[in-house]
Image (cartoon, rainbow, N blue to C red; front, side, top):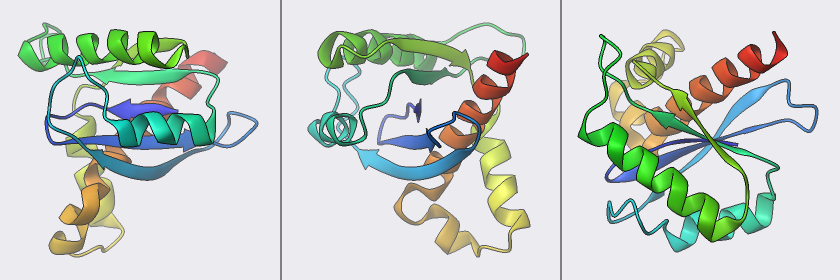
Length: 137
């Protein structure tokens, strides 16, 4: 499972049982406190029982990290502690931009792309896809 941290929504992506294919799952709304994973996400973890969670860390183009990266790392640590599931972090530089572009290329209208966190779930999918590809190398 991969998560795309955001202050309003957390994008969720999952892989198939063979850990080969990454697919968008959903987006979970929350209050933005990185130290308190939302209950809806904790319920989703209990339901899906992933073996590992990958949390995207937003970096600047020069590779440096800012406030959002700090929040994502705090969230990852709180999630691992609260769920007992191993959590890894992964560079998600430009994943939201790439997700928006991917949805645009499929012909999904702008209003639909923004609906219910589609971009967030797609960004999580791109993070998971990159992590799976790197793991297989």
